[in-house]
Image (cartoon, rainbow, N blue to C red):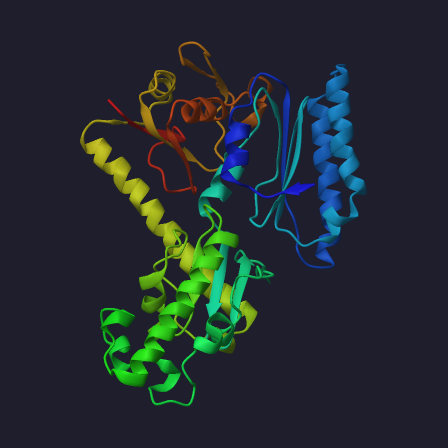
Length: 390
């Protein structure tokens, strides 16, 4: 019943317009006894929803309201720790998203779903997998900065070196360096197994390691990796470059956790993975802002909402930046993209119609990338900016 945010799900939602859509967002307390207040908060939001739908007599809208109210009886929803909740509903749609990110409390009734918070969360790319590799154990964990769980491995994934190589494994007691790696493999520059020196038995150990890593990589890639879900390698420093040298997994990140994963508690493993994801997201945001700055220097950037509206509908926008949580009352002409701004601030203006919510779906349909920026990162007061194609 409860869904997680995926690019495919967002792409489908961004296509939806023309019906009455109800969008409800609320932060949730994760721990007891504070968690007992989640139901109370939801009831308060339902009261706001009833007020916004007051006078609505269409059977579909009444049925929709009943679906929201029915969630009060879902014990699993209120007893399972989560940081936020998003519920989107219309005549032909009812989706409940379990969120591991806090969202601002909001209820909106409009002609399209309110998707800014989901876009922002999806761009954080918080989900990840952690591949823990030692000679004696292979584990895969999946989750985000708040919670992770160990994944049941497919039968084809070797659980350790002996299982991967069987009778072809070089004897553990033969000569070689600790861990089965030559000193050449530890030199700066990430020298691969084929360059490892030492010869003889040590060379056989390095070959074993390469075959072991190849077997792990192949099975994880085929049976566990998913597009858009980064894979973080947790292994000793001397194994990090060696594993990447043979890996064909497109989800494997360049940055890993260079420690023996068997010595790390689950919470510490999760914390280090979350730090990697945070650094990646910050670098991505810096790149977005640099892209906008470069476009501004070429006079291919725009901060005027009326101009942005016309450019979006003309297919001239390659990148649309929107300030997180920003609401701009107004309407957009569905033929020309002309923007009419209302004087009222916030969602109270003219039934809650919001310019940014109307521009985002059309921008995506016309091939633009939409990025929701954290508050305070945007210059100007329009709440949006655009990079133009021409």
